[in-house]
Image 1 (spheres, rainbow, N blue to C red):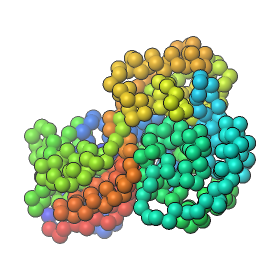
Image 2: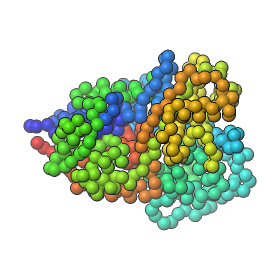
Image 3: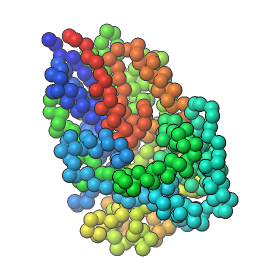
Image 4: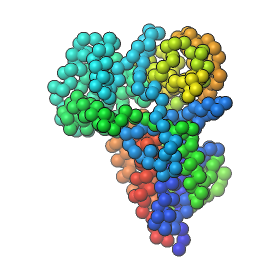
Length: 459
């Protein structure tokens, strides 16, 4: 019996996870499969990359995974990394906004009773804003179906001032997305469901607070020696698969089977093709053989991101920066970053880590500037704003073109059209950031679902 040939295009967390779960099926079900993973760059892992400077580690891309879903932690356990899973930096718990060159604490969504008290006591929220918030349980739920923007939802439930002061800067800084266009149905389904189930957000957050008391407070995790350890562990486990780096794909064509044309002129044949890359790149590969599907894929927008990592000696950081937090500009404020993470000190307390994110969608034109200019703008800001005059021990810029999906309203309808059109091409599947949700945990979960649902031709 000939082996069924599976080609996975993309060696990021989605592609590697898909290969891993498929290889598990091979061993458990004795399936006659041959798996090949093609990665365009010279390394596997995509946005999972850990930088090392004199035994100090920083994440070059994604830096944590969500603990509310178990897919990532389950994968770590299956790979023998359970003891390496640790809670991520507490910077995710405190948010600061910058207005008129002054930082102030932004009251986030309540995760505990004390968060509710802090939210209502916040001096940044005026009396009328707080009164409007307290009226939220009495606001009628939305009767009409369909999607709406996050901005529309927040305005309806909590008022314009809360949206402008709290929600908008947080979403723009943390998610690097425009809340006026951001799909509630795709990105925040729990909030949409909360309104349907409880009739208000108050009941939802009360239930959330109770559950957090029962299950613990940690929401984000990372690995002790860096998230790239997850990539290395996956690659080790995929010894039975063919992993090929520095192999960009030029085109994918279908005619009773898949023909994958590489940039070097080589042609591979596959019974099953999984495109574990972003939708815009998938659109280009399918433009000739599947023009309608290609057009549907091109409707998913992506943002280009740059990350600037810095390491300082702790003694060179003024007192304000000794904690940790997530800084985001207020709406209309101009700063050389979309968000700035104060990640906190190293284990020995001698070093301090910072990371700036720069979004092309939030700061148009920023991605075309040189690394030198980006570094200088961040250093100038840190000097002028925080009085950090010492040179960093380490500074690095990493760029991720078309890496962050924007998930605009109607995203799930767009996904339904993609699924419908893809049925015309047997053996074609999609994985990766932006098709359903985004983030490490979501990518792993979708890879597991896809690997378990694949049906293979009998050859």
